[in-house]
Image (tube, rainbow, N blue to C red; front, side, top):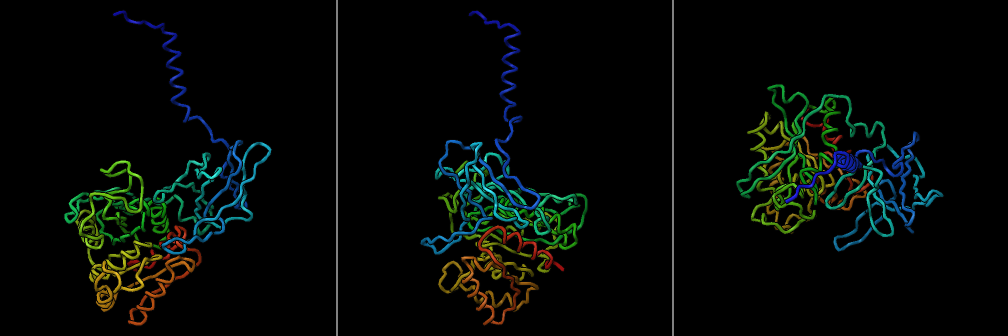
Length: 401
């Protein structure tokens, strides 16, 4: 067979062309400047889509909308019209400055929701991917990476004997942990429905909050364990043996069984105490969670009254009627035992617009009627990460003091 010999000049040209193609993504720039955050904290979003007939922006900085489903009423981010300018670019500018916060948004082009192609900063929440931007200020400074000592975030696999498979957790260790021999208290921080072990470290900015508050002296150095609270899920979608399954609140998997997350939770505590330098007693353990994770925190702490001295319920999915839920038999009696042992802090926080607000009112009445002391914090807004980040910053100074 004849061997084809190409001139060196042809080979060099082809190599150069391939190199240019390979580097195209590296050198290409964003189509337009979006988002543009002005000095007065107004924000302009832009999209170059000259053939579109309508472009909307939807985000948590817009007035909320209320929708009704078979599960009740829910608040969702509002929408606003983007306007087409003379340069064939769609624009939207907030009518007023935005308060310091981490905001999320996406765009809707002729009915199809997309992310902003000019903004590489994105987050996934269940099956939704949105862009994010931060308005700097005192209230949001803790969500930023600052020039302070940093802790470490690890993705850790542990084996569950009850479930018979490995499960992944995200674990934060404080600055200086790797170089010392000191033992630390532990906060177990739980996500909500549809979340996973990545939720608090990504959407909740937990590592940045911990780094900054430890540096301030407003939080004690601690280990923070963020497990996957879905018994049917070994790890976040795309990062488990199930492969690139479509994210869902509850897909069909082979891991369904007779155990609940509450049942397997002592395994998580045992693993943490065995593999990390913890102070393994009630006075140095806390548990907190949002939404479904708040319900988990309530049930787990009640079922293990000698395990946690600090409990935090953020917009918690607590029950209206304990007796009506077959998954939590005897929880009222367990709460009685738990409060008889006098936990140092039982902290409840929720927004007045949260769809679980009425459930929390009922739960607090149960605690009041049974003389079970707790601390309570209420603010505005609903069932959103903005509130849960705030609640974490308010809880941390109350732990292990």
